Amino acid sequence: MARPLRRRGAPRVIGLAGGVVLLVSLLCGSAQDAETAEKAQKVQEVQEAQERARVLVTTVDTEITPVIADHVAGALERAERQGYAAYAIELDTPGGLSESMGDIVRGILGSRVPVLVYVAPQGARAASAGAVITLAAHVAVMAPGTSIGAATPVGLQGEDLAAKVVNDAAAQAESLARLRGRNVAQAVAMVRQGRSLAVDEAVRLKVVDARAPSLEAALRVADGRRVLVAGERTVTVRTADARVDRAELSFFEQVRQALANPNLAYLLLTVGILGLLYELASPGVGVAGGIGVVSLLLALFSLAVLPVNVVGVLLLGVAAALFVAELFVPGTGGLAAGGGVALVLAGVFLFDAAQGVRVEPVVVVPTAVLMVVLAVLAGRVALRSRRGKAVSGTDAYRDRTVTVHKSEDGREQAFMDGTWWSVRSTGPPLQHGDQVRVVDLDGLTLVVEPVEKT
Image (tube, rainbow, N blue to C red; front, top):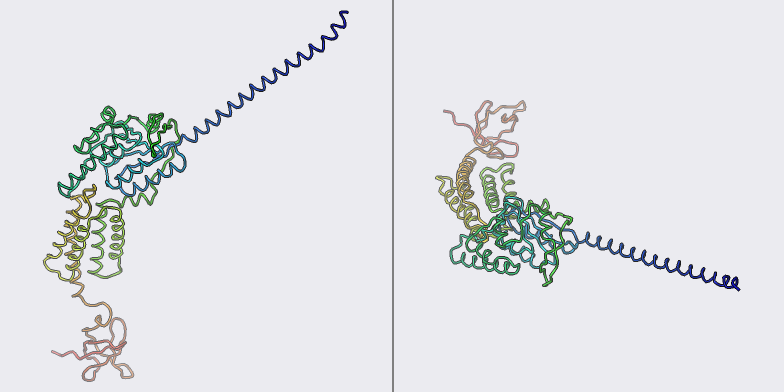
């Protein structure tokens, strides 16, 4: 009876073992699938993090002009379009045009990506317009040895207008400081009192967010901060160990920026007027005229970028007219002196100083004095040219004395300037050896008259 029982239990044992093996296999497979899925999710998260961790950076180490404003606007658009985690401006500026500053501030406020302003390198400053741009940034960081402030608008248009400009700038600084949670009182003081702050004081007073020795450190400082971007949307800045892409000024933009200089524009205008002046005084191969035209074209481009006053342009036209008049009425140099005075006044009123743009006096006065001297010399050159003998055409031969020669066939001829000319008398017949004076030119024939003998 025992054997049959053992025979019937064997299959049960085998089935039980198989079930256990199958269960273990299923459990192991599930664990492997879960591990694989987890790894895939981590890889995806890393890839997404790497994709987000890109920062577009622009260096602004010059005055704030329409060229800079256009470049920043283009870089912001690129940062949004290409999905950058943030846009950073490495800033070192003495200030610039308030209108261009306003364009940059509006671009930052409307940006859908966080904007970081990093005042760098060491010794850099965010002055005037640069201070307001820094206040507008979502994250503001400064390098050691830098400063911020002196944001009071500079103008030469009168106290009433200056007060209006200062009030407007102070209100803007206050609004930006409140929006970014920064020190409102200090922001207003930078405008109304022209206060400047060193980096440590700026951080302590919460005018900026932090201090960092490098751009990489500034990006780490900004990482994890929650900021409000366009559309009232709060985002977390993710810039730690981010890949940095550069969006610097192109060569053409650098040329445009170089020309957007009021002192250079004034000098180009002066050189242009001077070149045309000397071309009128002594017409020749056109070198002076060519230089003048090119200079005026470059100056016109500068004027198109900078804020120009109509009064300054009119004074510049008066100066040019007086200098040209000196060519036709050379004398004591009175007209040239008047042109010099008009040129000085043009330098003072040519640009809108309330916008932070003006020609420096150290450029205006010496340039005007030199222009007066050169205009007087041009007048002397023009006078000498008018009094001098002609070098071509009929006038080049008139009043010259030649000797008549009889040719073998009996025709009268005269040798002049290396060539034998036919001669025709306006008076009595000519004899061989007569001295005659040229009075006209008829084709290749000299029209002459006898020279009175003394």
